[in-house]
Image (cartoon, rainbow, N blue to C red; front, side):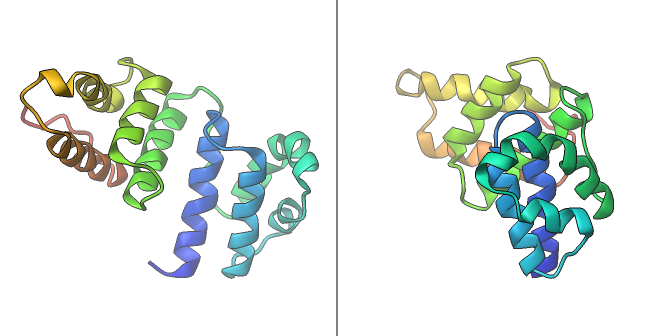
Length: 165
């Protein structure tokens, strides 16, 4: 992946994670700075990158949709189904990049989405299995491997509907 592709992924992922409360406004500003350094540019991106921590808390909600539009990225409205799906994919990307452990991914997905969303269901079930691993017939390594497989499925946009149980 090129630096520009990576910088494009980070603002998109951070925007959706911010919209569900998984990232802070100052994290979005940091991603904007990284995007500028990687060669992305737009007027609103420059403004966003210049925000202080205090300004970010107040101004990111209004400016972020403009930045994403200028960069031809998607802004997902809060609580939209598409936004929730994108947030799960962003969390999966974070796990695959080593920013979350498989256990942390399963826990965050379960806490955020419960057993309500089809894309989240298997990870929510695996989080439940982590809680009883010492009493079950599976090891932590097996659970981690299955969560990693689910993360790959999510990150690559596969629905998992044809998955064998």
